[in-house]
Image (tube, rainbow, N blue to C red; front, side):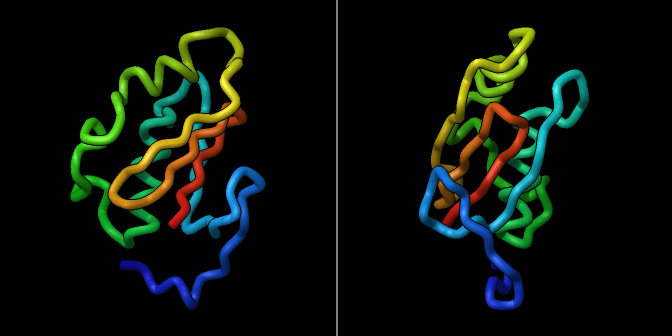
Length: 100
């Protein structure tokens, strides 16, 4: 697990818990919401993303990407779910936050 005492934390307006890690995703790129989730959770755990258990154990990755990427403009505000004991928030503005 990452040494959180050496790392500054920020707060997400949608949650009172500190943000342990964050990432961003972009439309029309390989940097999808799913990729951003796995990257941010790996950062929070201080782990290699390929060593994490499948995201599909917590949420359907294809449905998550489709929800944010299938329309011309995202109308979804955010999606919250639990993954590996973290609260993960995927925001429609292209950001992902990971909370304890």
